Image (cartoon, rainbow over the protein chains, first blue to last red):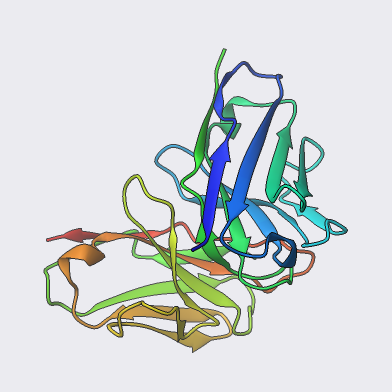
Length: 121
Length: 108
């Protein structure tokens, strides 16, 4: 079955950088758009970024545009999120999610368990 | 597109019928999904394209609506259904796949 395992979260100071990873298995990774979604403590869901199956298209929420970069390695079945200039309000659980179709505009039919990021001085 | 869910919290007894609402600031056509999230777990997709149930989701869950007004109905609430429910639109370009703020269904 589909398995998505995020890693790379932790505690960092404001202004620092961090890279999250999401290891995928159980499906043909190279045929799915992939997304990052986060959830601040006690809050709702916020979509952050999507990358097309072939990595040619990347789109971001305004809240992270210019600071976060999504990428993927289809040979290693891994999704990444490079996060720079981190802010306190970036704290939360970060989920990778599999797009239901190859389209970048789609819903998410599988989610990882999430990795937690805390940005604090 | 801004998604607004109501109510924020719903206190319900097991066996009752539950109706959750989701409104979009402009039409999302039929590109509307519902997720269920339990504490400490990732969201789980229940329904997509307004009314299509994901395989394995019980028939007591149903979705309806069009344009800007959508509803998730749970016909007879079971104990395992107490959770937070989110709607999400996936219709705008460039992609900005917004979620509603969620409705918490709690035990009355």
